[in-house]
Image (cartoon, rainbow, N blue to C red; front, side, top):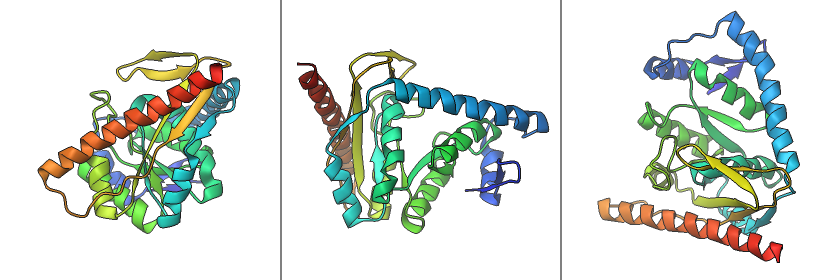
Length: 255
């Protein structure tokens, strides 16, 4: 959780300060770094918006699943593979008309300040934490965002470092604790390049985009180890099926 400072930055709350003690970066928010961020964030924001603008307006299939989930609960848990962040995040940010308040986990250290400012500028909610170094604390803050603030935190279940396409249990535990559903998402692009450990999808200019939204998945309040593993397998299957749906629609559009 953050507070806005007079320079447009985000002052740390006591919780963020506690997080920062657990992060590995030794950097501090100096005056020079604040000035650099003030220049860099608008530049990155412009590049991101230009990238979105150079692709064709995304076609969305399965949007009724998001609306149906929000009719049953004021918040939910969007899930998509790490490689699909670019347009799945955009879709969530644009669903404020449905009352969706999309949240994103950002490192609470100085390293994450650029990401936090970008998310705020795009109208999203920032949840400060690290699933790698402060996993239990991040899970607690996800829960508070979901239940107390009606924020829907986007989760990449194979992130931030992989293995790619492995559905880790965090989102399932969060759904179990909060009583909120998981919502699978994916997107497909007609032309793209892929890179990094997750084969991050970067659509090329003029690419057609199809975003697919799957059916919400509600998790029982009680799960033993075998049931938890079963939920992981099921959600991984649903994410694959959601991508296949987007890809099939893209192929149909080409014909």
